[in-house]
Length: 471
Image 1 (tube, helix red, strand yellow):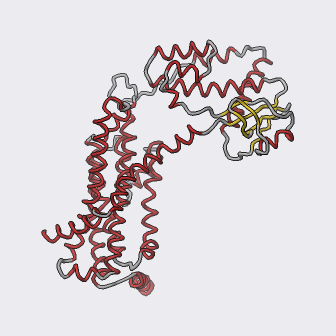
Image 2 (cartoon, helix red, strand yellow):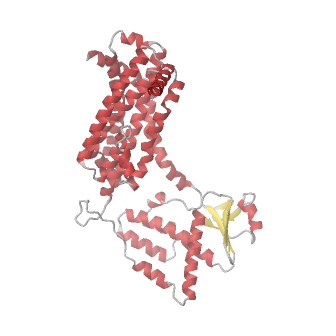
Image 3 (cartoon, one colour):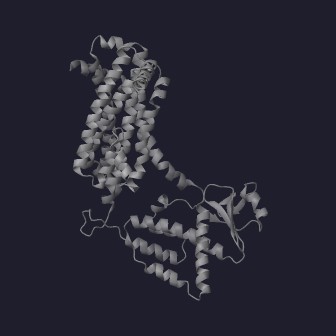
C-alpha cells in the first residue's frame, strides 16, 4: 500500500506543481463562461441593420413596422414579467398607449431591464431609390444610406409587386427579417380574404384575445394543482450541466495518463519504476494520482462556486440559486459521483494501455481517434435527452458501457426506476473491471516487454488468419 501511495503522490505532484495545470484550472471556467455568454453578447451588440420597403400603397410597410415593434415589445414584456411586478406591467402598457417607444417605456418602468434587452435588430429607412437597380449600390455597401443611427449600408429591401414580394439583401444566409416579412404577407392575405367576404378583421383579433391560454401541468410535480414551475424543470437542466462537467473532467484528466505514459515509455522510465514497484502497484498508483488531480479540480471549482454563492447572497437570481440547490440533490449527486469514478477508471485504463504501446504523441492520436469519436456521442446526446427523453434508442445507448456514465445522469430526472439505475451501475462496475484486466495485460506487453503498435497489428492479424484456417 505504501508503494501505491508513493506512485500516486509522484503522479499527483508531477502535474499539480506545473504552471500549465493551474492555468488550465483558472481558464477552463472562464472559457466555458465565455462560450456560454458570447452568443448572447454577440446578439446583444449586433448593431441595428437598415431595411427599406418599396410599396405603392404602404400597407405592407405599415404592417411590417408594426410586426418588428411588436416582437421587441414582447421581449421587453418578458423582462418586466420576470421582475414579478404587476404594477410595472400596467405602467408599461399605459406608456405604450400614450405613444412611448418600447425602449422609452422600458427605461421608465424597469431601468435595469434596458441592459438585458437586445439591441434593436432592424431599423426602417426611407428608400434611397425607387427601383431595384437604384438600390443595389446601397445593398452592396458601395453607397451608404442615412438614418436615425447615422450612415450605414442598406441591409435589405422589400419590393412589393402585384404578384409577389421580392426580398433583396447581400446576406444570403440570415433569414430573420425575411421570415418576419413572410409572416406579415400572410397576415395581410388573411385580412384581404376576410374583407372580400365582408367579415371584419376585428373578429380575428377578438378571437385570438379570447383564446384560452395553455397552462403546463404534470401529475409528478409537488404542487397540488400540478402547475409546472422552474423548480420542476431545474433537475433536467442540472443533469445536463453535470453530464457535461463529467465529460469535461474525464476528457481532461485521462489525457494526463496518456501523455505521461508515452513520456515514460520513450524515456525508458518504466524500467526504473518497475525495479521498485510491481506492475499492479504502478497502475493503481497512476490511476489514483490522476484521480486526486481531478478531485483537486472539482474541489477548487466547487469552493469558488460556494464562495461566490455566499458572497453574492440575495443578489443571485432565484433560478441560479435553485440550480445550486439541485446539484446537491442526492438522487443526482450520488449517481454522478459513481459515474465519474467508474467512467474515469474505464477511460483511464484504456488510455494507459494504449499509451504504453505508443512511442510518440502522433502515434497515440492516430490510435485514439475512435475513442475520441465515441466520447463525442454523449455531447451530441445532451440536447436530444431533453426533447426525446423516452426515445428507445437513447435507452439502448445508455446500456453501452462507454456511454453509460454520461447518459445515466441525463435519464435520472425522467423518473428512471431505482432498480434500473442500480442495474446500470452494476453493469458499469463489471465492464470497468473487464477493462482494467485487459488494460493491465496490454500495459504489461507495452511497458514491460516493449510491445508497440506494430506488434499489436501483427497480433490482430494473426487472429484473423486463425479464423480463416478454422473456417
